[in-house]
Amino acid sequence: MPTMKRIKTDYVGVYYIMGTAVSTGKPEKIYYIIYRRDNKLIEEKAGRQFQDAMTPARAARVRAERIEGKQPTNEERRKEKKRKKEIQGWTIKRLWEAYLETKPQTRSFRIDDQRFKLHIDPVLGNRELKDLVPLDLDRLRISLLKQKSAQTVKSAMALIKRISNFAKNKRLCPSIDFKIILPKVNNAKTEFLTEGQLKRLMAVIAEDLNPYAGSIMLTALYTGMRKSEILKLEWSDIDFERGFIHIRGPKGGQDARIPLNDPARAVFEKLPRTHELVFPGLHGQRMGLYHAIARIKEKAELPADFRPLHGLRHQYASMLASSGKVDMYVLQKLLTHKSPIMTQRYAHLHDEALKRASNLAGELVAQVVKAQESDKVVNLDEKRG
Image 1 (spheres, rainbow, N blue to C red):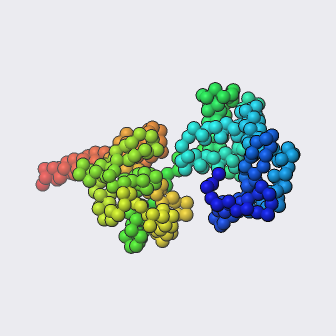
Image 2 (cartoon, helix red, strand yellow):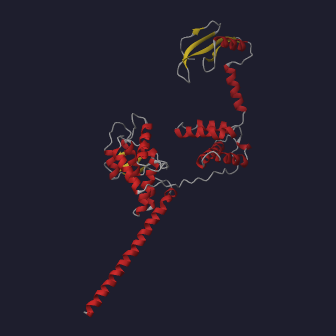
Image 3 (cartoon, rainbow, N blue to C red):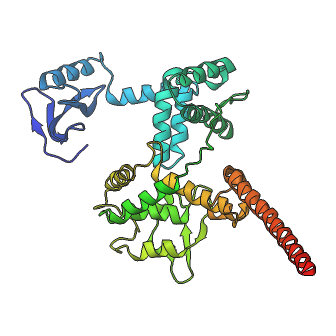
């Protein structure tokens, strides 16, 4: 109980302390009651002024009902809740709550929790895994696909799979004994700017007054780093002397190291070092950066569906692949892809570069043959002369 001043009311055994309303942050009275039951002195909260619409008179009625045994005490309520939970089966909702308790409350897990509450809990939350049949998940998947993208539905169905594996690994209850079908998602979209679009973008960045937005975009273009990697980049991660950038916790899992090329070095050297982060944002507010990046994109007249930072990473990879000077293994390492499968989306650009090189070989041979034929004509003319 908070150690705050108790304020008496006109009702026996009812007092309140001043607290703060959870929703508004304004002052709020929190009512408590004191009474004896079974020869035991009990002091417990009756309710909050706004949140529970509690008044001194209502608190007095609650006190009277608890003295008479018509209402359970708070402790009895807690024990009953615990008892019901213990006899309750391991529902999907209960499993999910237990799963979350074992994980750090990161942003990704908060997103997963929201996804669970929106898409899974309303339909399957009170069901147990052992009672599910393939048709249940088929219906859920089909229903969600009518409203959401394939990627959203895939993520939701993957949560059910994760819950089932958790139940099995922790030996809490039988897991799902059939294959969970996930929607197919085409994630192979490769964003690529035309030469004109890229020129306009570079011109707009050069004129933009935001100290960080344009530099973040140039970092993505010159290094191929992911947005999350760029935004958490610290000055200590950049080795100017040896010419490398240390990427902590990339999507692939293990820390990685990529070369610091000259254009990226020039970007970093122009930035102020006012924070341990290379890109701290405007007054620490990342939202200001996102607005500035969106403004640059709009002013440069880039396609509406072009994702600035993700798209510029693709631009970096596409240009290297189409140059014909970088093999797919090197490209995989530069992009810090854990598997070569992800890098394969750029294989067709690499193949086109190989074709151009092959055609060039043919043209060079043709030039040699043509030169030899010209020499023969010249020699014949000399003999005739």
